Length: 280
Image (cartoon, rainbow, N blue to C red):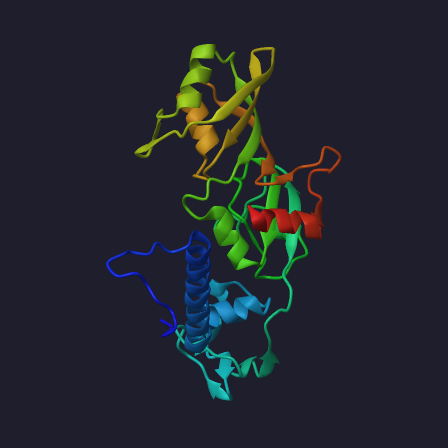
């Protein structure tokens, strides 16, 4: 406190609101700076570092480390928990590697019949990566089950992936579903309220749902959900007596699937699309 400031005795001075806000901002900035500095000082796990180089997934990186293919500062690295700090020299099979300076962001119109996985050794089913020319560390943001088609985001930006898929993020996911039977108003209201038993100890969330059309014993629905649980749309509608015959994701967060984009095609996201995704 400055020695030149004086106060009336026995009088509590209330802090100015602007000064209080400014002080809070300074404190928050200092805390973030300290946290970031600590993170840099403590280093980054070797598997995450290698994935950030665009060489492989983190799981594959762990296998490389255990196989003795990785060295740090000229010495073999065999511990998956090894931390890489600024200035460390990392090599794989004797070749120096460096972190990527930019990230990949892709929108894919996934067809039905493709699995969102890097491997399917036992059953040998088609994988989305069989049809995408991307680096090994580019992964889907969440998944679509094998029989579901439509919008899929893929990236190597781990921060964006975590922001879009973390519990509690409540990111909107819009689907169009063709279901068996005519969906009654009572059922629609149940789906809007949520709480339907869908098995595995789960109950449904509250949905935004509208009927688009009804024809030949089927109903087309537009559905918006806010969590990406395993087969949530299919399980919920099955529990209501309306099995899904076709399911397409048409929107994820701020991204919408264009009508003229053929199934099986993909493109890079533009700067505005990436910015909107990151801003929430």
